[in-house]
Each structure stands twice: as structure tokens, then as C-alpha cells.
Amino acid sequence: MKLSRVLVFLLLSFTSCLLHAEDIKKIVLHINDGFKLGHLENSVNNLFKEIGTDIDVKVVVNGKAVTRLLRTNNESAKIVKSVLDHGVIIGLCHNAVNNNRVKKEMLIEGLNVLEQDGNVTILKYQSQGFYYIKL
Image (cartoon, rainbow, N blue to C red):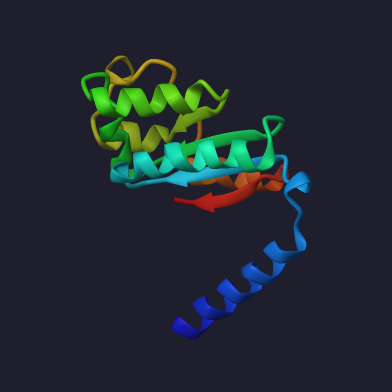
């Protein structure tokens, strides 16, 4: 198992060396740990700074992370606003929303509940040429 992870890491590292920032136009960020929201904000800021403003960035949130995206969470609301201000679309897995008993009206303004499972959405984005980054 560890050997396969190392091989995947090396393959991805090698592939990433072949890519040029100007070739990257579509990125999907995946977050399922609500405590990484600060990391999400930093990642979005860095992507736009390093690659440019003409990129299409989508965020897919699933798992327990959806519970950190409630209107009552002021810290998360600031982070979400910062990310949305870049024109990034943030989609929440409808299964995670339902399984965590979160109602749409409880969510921070600007968030979208996905029509499909978060993982299915990520797969669709990848089939459309989006680069995947797990946060």
C-alpha cells in the first residue's frame, strides 16, 4: 500500500514538472475537513496569484465539512466570501448536507447544494479537463 502511494506521488510529481502554469485553466478543489477552510482560502488566493485571473476554479465540499459552513459561523463566512469574491463556485454535496441534517437556509449565502454526489461531481469536472487538488 505504501509503495503504491509513493509511486503515485512520484508519477504526479513528474507529471506536474511537465505542466506549465499557463496551461492550467480549470481546477477543482476538494475539501471534506471543515478545519481546512483557512487552507482553502490560501490555496485559492495562491492559485489566482501564481496562475492568473483567467482560471476556472470550482470547490466541492463533502463530508462533515458542510457543518462548518453555517451562517452562524462568522469565521467561515469571511473565508467563503473571500473565495467567492474570486468568482469561485463552491458546491456542497447534497448527500453530505442531508446526512448532516443541514438545511439550505442554514448555509452561508452564496453556497450551492449540488444536484449530485460530491464525488460524482468531481469525476465529472475531471472528465471536463479540471485538475484535481485535495485539500
